[in-house]
Image (cartoon, rainbow, N blue to C red; front, top):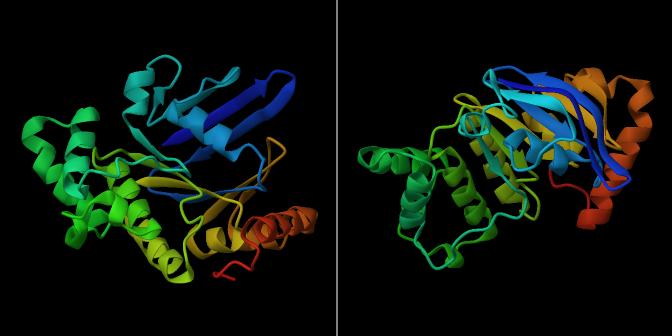
Length: 246
């Protein structure tokens, strides 16, 4: 479903990504792990078509992002870490607006919105003003926005950052439900969260893929011990506490 082949990206003389390559199969729930500054967000933006790679190729569902960017981007949805929403709009009205922006036919908007509200477990909040919602519910609105046009794949960038333990648990269940219908690439610096969700993990450090495999397999790889220590330190520094999932 998603293929990244030899992607390079630099900002001036600083390399953000170097020869990044991996593939994710249809329907797979894959974790994208790395310390803060590893290049995860840059990689996700390139996969989503928000940012151009200096070299390399990205294909989504067999469509080249370089050759057919609009068609490829239409098969994928990206939820950034800092999700910008129109706070003055009600949830349902916002999703109707976003469905039209994303090209959903007018006659199909109501059905698409109902489906997105159900996927994000937001049915009881459809009439709520977005600014009145908790961070956890605003993240659900972001998920509903991501799926409203029925993309084949979802890119979720640190979607559980800032959520309390109950919200994290609820969000994990939501993502598990999405994985049955969409290919999901979930980015985080929190390895414990990724292990609790994903059947496969791609580890990015310093802009390079250093490991790719099942969580148990990677935990048993002694060459990655320093990486896991760095991930734990990164999580402690960003949150000031141990992850609620650990």
